[in-house]
Length: 60
Image 1 (cartoon, one colour):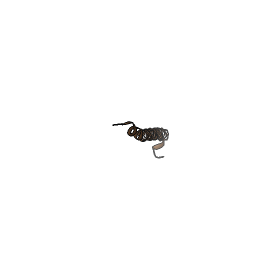
Image 2: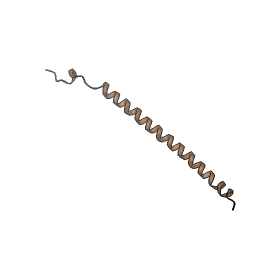
Image 3: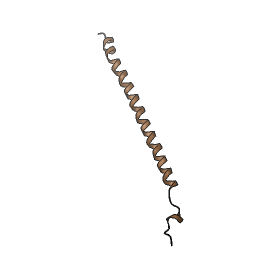
Image 4: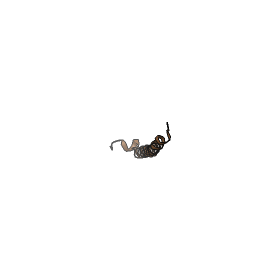
């Protein structure tokens, strides 16, 4: 039995599948990194914009 023609038929599909997997993985990692960076920026903004004790007290 000759397996070479069967392997030759399967290899292109496997190659495309691997390329697709790498591309989707890169997109997911980029999205995760972007979300983490935005969360850090939002946390930094909130910490900078928090009122001090003097600002949060009502004026007499």
